[in-house]
Length: 303
Image (cartoon, rainbow, N blue to C red; front, side):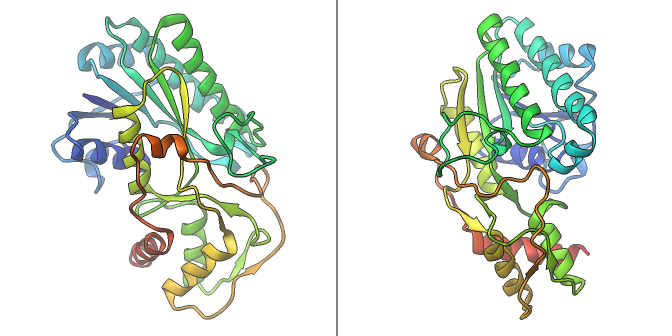
């Protein structure tokens, strides 16, 4: 059985569907209501509550008794963390420590899979970045994700909770109404071709359907001994390339115009070493061109 904490969100609802499709019994939990989301499996129960509540979390773990707990709750907004680091810290750390404490108190603690972030790496000196690269976060969000991983190490070493950390790189797909692919497409649809940055910044994009497939693969096959696993495609794409793919999908002939201003907390280049993930049997199914075309089609119908 898999308990998806944060199943009411974008990535969580996809994860619930992927785990259910792979044959897991799935229970979702979170503050919202995932049952109205397109991707959330209709035959999976959803328990509504606040992960900062020790009563809710304790009852959740004692009643569900999951084999795997996938923690994908909390914000994933670098710029918001720069503006309000206190709020980001509280939203990242307080729910997780309650969940870990509750997991440590049941007779058989579940394997806890933390959906972490490549923001922990920051600006790395070499590419591809491997899991043993020393952390160098450059945003409050990155520091707080590193703090989440430290909590997992604490509960693994002191309380015997099996843990694993999945560091997710750049995400996109239907249903994600934020981040670069969404913003660039929305601007282009409005006739605005001015974009932030130089265009030479790179990201390692993986479609959301592949990300959750990777998470299920990790949940099924990783040893859960505190290891870190990169979740990405292993391919580096410049933001100019990404913008050009979006424009081609829209039939836009204007070139993107970058303002040469960099966002605070944003790394310059990313490409992941995905050899550990590949060793677990994961294979990417959606390439960037096809994934962007599908996502842009959804965004065009969503406006």
